[in-house]
Image 1 (cartoon, rainbow, N blue to C red):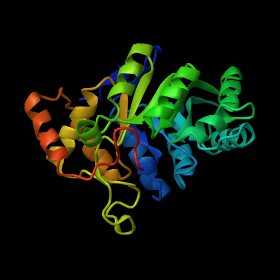
Image 2: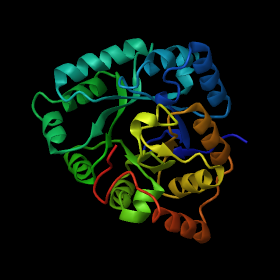
Image 3: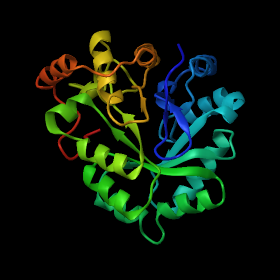
Image 4: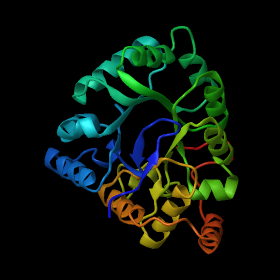
Length: 288
């Protein structure tokens, strides 16, 4: 069974409901990266996400995706806040990823008012995104967020095509994070790309974590992993990214191929579970 595809906001593009994040292949050898990307393509995955901050992921993905590039949707990001730095990073990412354009380019990890003020300044990174789109270096523009307040300000200031945001059962059910943003995005035709769907809670000891590429403790129990994924895909999202580990990516792939909307009983189980964890954020922000 091939993976479901959903419309990218109000654009005439369709993305697989599970994307492959570069963080999944970070630190692997090239053969392993090639194998994971090839398997993902064969399963119908066409959405790939990466960023310069993910170690060697750009180098690995650039080679692994090269022969599939024409049929893939490649998203990249910049965490630089000035036009000069963001422009340099954009061109460097294009070179490393062996492509002459990105389908989506995003402001990365917008967390606070300072981030907003810097990117929206006369010499801010938004100038890079806008000019890149005018030149055909990118097709769509978006941002990833850790703060509802900043996300709203960005949406009010520019017509973004997408938002990459946590749609996580735990922080949503316990604190309501994301509910308002999902509604705003839906009403404006902005595509929602989901992060942290399989996040369980904050690591008790971040230095001694089981999954080295995961900034949070992920769900690896198959039963609850499926419920967590069902929760996210039952919302108005286009696609989601799994935690940064090949085993967890394969676990997510197994369940999204057989997706069915979450039931009221399953929602109750997740709600009860949410009261027993240390969630990854509050009502207004995500901590990691």
